[in-house]
Amino acid sequence: MQDSTSAIGILIGTNRKNSISEQIGYYYAERLAARNISYDLVQLQNLPKDFLFTQTYGNQNPEFAKFQELIDRHQKWIIVIPEYNGSYPGVLKSFIDALRHPDSFSRKKVALVGVSSGAYGNAVGLSHFSDVLAYLNADVLGLRLKLANILKHFSQGAFTFEVYSNFVEKQIDTFLDF
Image (cartoon, rainbow, N blue to C red; front, side, top):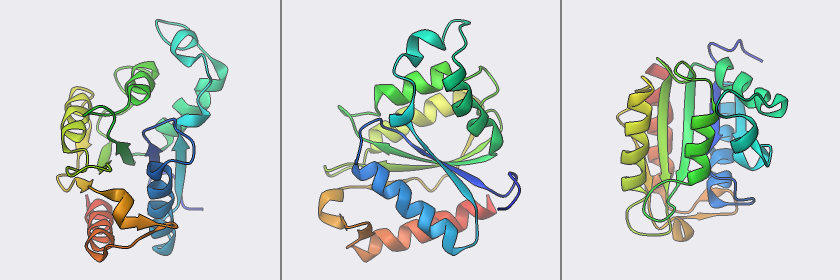
């Protein structure tokens, strides 16, 4: 495994099990592995059930500490964000709020991937989350993928729409140089 400065974290921005976002995260992991880039996949479905109460406002949760260590380990993050009610999932915001503030994402480089079954690929949610990352002093890659109508274009772990697979490759290449 490469050292942590060259490894990339992949954060699945939902706690829904077996989600399309999770599958997209695994797709990114495969594409990184094909380039011999190591990665850690962080799934919010594995958060401690009570983290919102046991990790915030000065409290410390030993199970949550593992997530903080993963965030600290990487300087680059790919975050896959599904559209929930026209924005991003509340569990993602709660996770960010529970991390050590203000340095958990400060000066880290982030690539965003929006996922939706609708026509806009979570464009609004990516905008909202970009504002959060800006507040946290993260550097967000300009090439933000908006994977719309994903149920039509992704099946059995792969894109069925070549435009999307090409965009993913371009985003990864750009992110590696970012």
